[in-house]
Image (cartoon, rainbow, N blue to C red; front, side, top):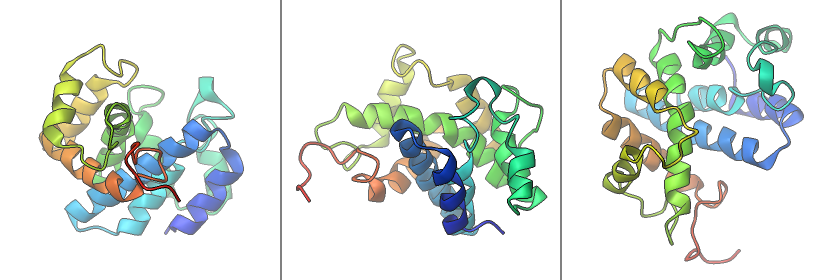
Length: 191
């Protein structure tokens, strides 16, 4: 089973762009929170979240086409590689999310982008972000328009959960990482 330490080792060797590292941290935090919600192994889900865009920096136009072989060669299980591959369902591959972990990754990958954009507009960042504020921004299709709302809504349906519930779980999961992900806001004490 993939550990968070191993996921960081692999991802950090392949991903150097700051925005991609922050995205990996966002998805990791959200996946940990989703694991808690489902009573699953938090570290394992965080590891999958952290490693999900392993090939994106090197192959942005061929995302996930260089992931399976590389990660299997690095010793990941077929199950873990499949979980990572499933976030490209309907976008770049046909690996349909089946497990709660796969469905969660598929959903939070895009969802965390809108949460991040919303938090960046607030004086206190994500630290005091409420789901009601997030939902107002989410409904504005011009806000964070690069984030695929269709994927988010499809993912929530797969999970059998309301968008507001998934967003609340992810926001709470991301709050402890506020400083690391640049979302502590201007009010945070300096280090």
